[in-house]
Image (cartoon, rainbow, N blue to C red; front, side):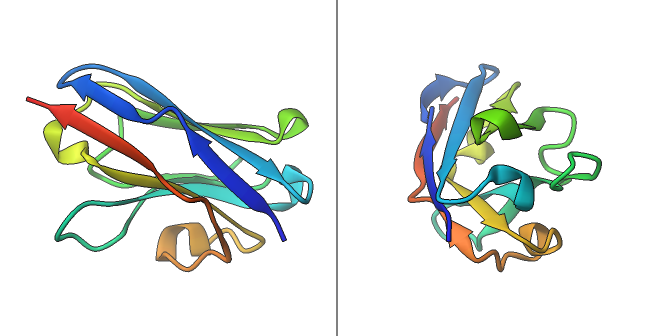
Length: 123
């Protein structure tokens, strides 16, 4: 299938920024819709952002719209999540995900997942 590995998580003060990266291997990224999910303690897994294979269709959760930007570089097999104006409620483990069907990157059922990277936003 595809192997996904996230990086770029860490600790940041509220109002700060982080950029998460997801490196894909095993198949060409252009075939896959990509997305980011997050899981906070006591919360259900949440679709944060997704981007279609062509990049033409982008989804953001209401909670992050205007603050987060998803992008992809198919030539480098990379997907990014630029997170600005971070809030404590953004604290979660963030997971990169991929699927051939773009809508699964919104519904929560992609076929491939990374291991997750912790993002902690302090107040």
